[in-house]
Image (cartoon, rainbow, N blue to C red):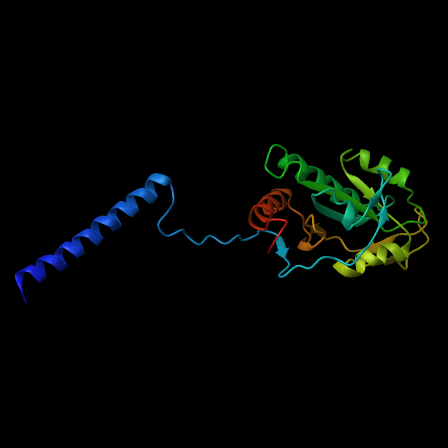
Length: 221
């Protein structure tokens, strides 16, 4: 092989090496890693919903004089709990946990992007005014909603929330309701994004919500 050919190939190899080093250096200078590490989001307590789709239309009168519906999510994510104001234990505990989560998210990127919503499944006893007063004990920023059972089922049937009168009816409360205790996370496009089953741990829920909002924008998957 001619010396000139060998020299030419060496020059090309040397030039390629120099360009590679320069590219790496430029990447480090710009703060761009040459091979970004794969760090998939792993929730602590949330169950993520794959391939979420928008919910079918529903509309419930809310405590703000409007309605809770896909069109009235105010461009925010919504964390929903279901229950009733006469609930002896689960509902007040859940609402206290939601208030704790809300406090933990203050000052984070989630602050202002997420709304806490309590849906009463006891429209016979829970007026909107009663719900408003009930929520004020936990957090006045919470939004309440209810409606007749037909309207309620348009929402609950889609997201796997169950409720029914319990067999035990002779109580000081008149009657009690059995209902699902999990929390439901909807995105601003009214898509079911995640479920939080009991037991509810505020630190884990807050961390998961931050992770979900950071990794799954409202538009797209």
